[in-house]
Amino acid sequence: MIEEEVKFKTSRGLKLAGALLSPDEKLRDVVVFAHGTGSSKASPRNRGIAERLLNHGIASFLFDFTGHGDSDGIPEQSTQDQQFDDLISAIDFLSAQTLVETRFVGVNGSSTGGTVAIRAAAEDPRVQVMVLRVPRSLGILQYAPDVRAPTLIIQGSEDKVVLPEAREIYESLTCPKELQIIKGAGHLFEEKPSYLRRMTELTCAWFEQWFAKLAETE
Image (cartoon, rainbow, N blue to C red; front, side, top):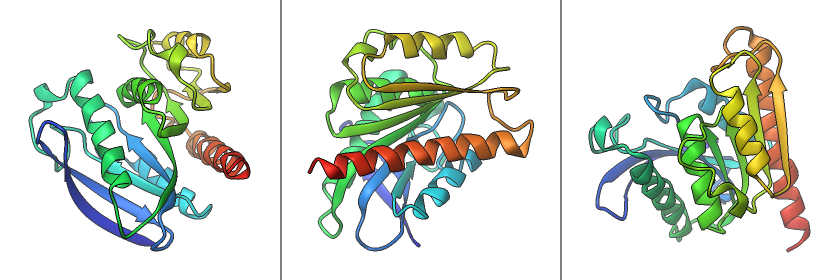
């Protein structure tokens, strides 16, 4: 495994911190992680998924949104619009790398990061596969019908506040889609180790499956 700490700028000039995990020096398929409010690139759930993806030959790019972790700014600046700019800037950064080659890009968005991921997938065709974990629907449903990337939504059955929002997003999507509800799990899937394992397995399987299908059509 190769892990590289990087810094990159948003279109608005803010400097963001990221970590690029790759199975080798050839980047190839990569998943960009959009974390939730108050989280960071160090999220144990996202980190666990990223390390598991390496076993499938898939790279990961974890970064801190504006006002989070090691990135510039304060939390109050980290609006939905700013986070959208952050996520697109992260994809721009990967696309501009000259020493490695990015083939297909997926996005893994959790909670409010899932909200931002939906808009990114609707507006940027570089997002070709997507997984949303406990996604929030505030201000984003108008973008959902324009998403073309095959999308998996993973939700805990006991996450009573977010579950209706996840269902609402699912119904609004017109792309290839799937909704997986893990019975007994809450917002963070931390009640039992099996919930976290199941969430991780579903996420990795979705990216592996759809990256392989994209490769078949090249």
